[in-house]
Length: 425
Image 1 (spheres, rainbow, N blue to C red):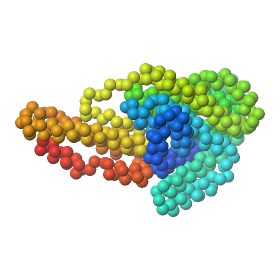
Image 2: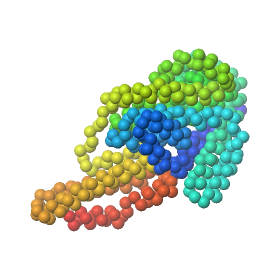
Image 3: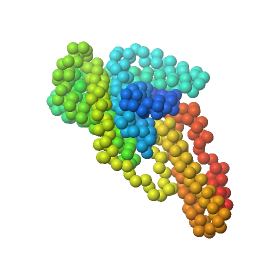
Image 4: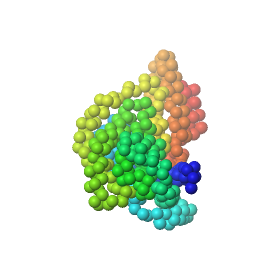
């Protein structure tokens, strides 16, 4: 097989793996999105509960970025303390390791059954939840199929002298390995995909166990960049939790990197297979980071509060405050954001009506301009909410969320009502 053919196969198989992960994520959000958000909301009280909720929700979603966005929706405006939010992220990092543990075993023989069973559930399911679970099952089957194809494509590379020479140059420099795997995890937007690819390379003998463990550190580092870069929107408050998660990962990597050799020697006693070593080290690293940092979280939170102070709210009342564009791919969060903005809009309506009543009672012509300006504010908020709702990722909407969206979207008649009200005023 030529080098060009190998690259084409690798790109296609990695894309299939990412698509399988996307199907699992979107299927779970459609089936249980609101329930998962409720679980997180209830659990954000103590560090232990928040940690366990982060483990559970991220194990199901297979996306620490989605979990981070849900947490951000609770912490926005100081509704939830930053300490349990950081604990959720520690749990989310552990949650992403569990599916890697399952897929590190040879379960490739069951992917045809998963794909077929998921297809039947998707086509024949009587409820939307059954159809969504069928979508999840198909996604799991595609992930296993992609791993099977990856192992078949990578196996001939083991005998390639060019690859061996290249790895011989790279392997002695762990920083290059960390950087390469971090870039891949960041581009893939999935630590699961990065870890499974590293396991495939290790299982085929393309990289040795030492290099695999070093690349695991890079994958953990790269995956923590996704929520940091996707959840900013220029608001320093939104950087607190993602940056705290990233900083804890960086410290964990700096501590673990010089200890790779003794860790490898100890772990090889239990399971010397390179792919299993990578999966076990991935779990061990995240569990140890959680164990080390969960107690000093109050001090870490204080540092983050000082490093990222709350930005002053826009003085313009017509500027939306809760319509976070980063949450559009997570419908349960986006709908909650829109609901908060609508409630703020209702307060503005109440203020305008009160001013209108005062205008008629006191015959104060100076209030006309005030009412007119409030009406302009309502128009701008109304348009912003409509645009926001129309931009929500409909693919991940559950049946309940789709109904909620259709009933909450402002209709032309509502728009006419605002116009009539402002004209009469």
